[in-house]
Image 1 (tube, one colour):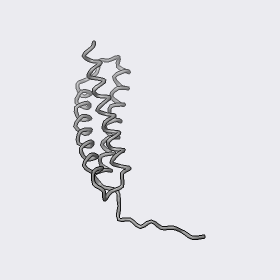
Image 2: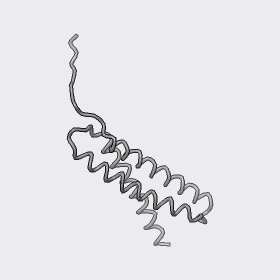
Image 3: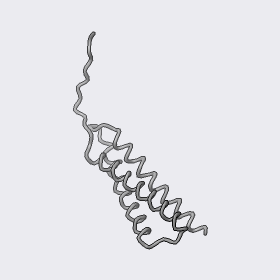
Image 4: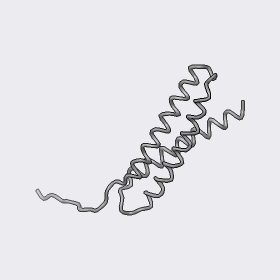
Length: 104
């Protein structure tokens, strides 16, 4: 049986992995804040708003790192696209929260 080996110089980028980690942190913190605000029937401390602002900052930084890395051909594409997806999801959730808050 003949084995085929693929030799490549590609590797995973540290920026792309950090982009995915920032997306996980943003989505996890948003999920926790949403769950805790439902538990308290919407009467939440100001720290929950600070968590939302930090989630926006983390998502914007993570999205930037993912976009920069996905354009570089010397890296694998899994983590950059995962980071872009997770950070865009977090920004979309935050936009939905702000939109729903303005309707009330």
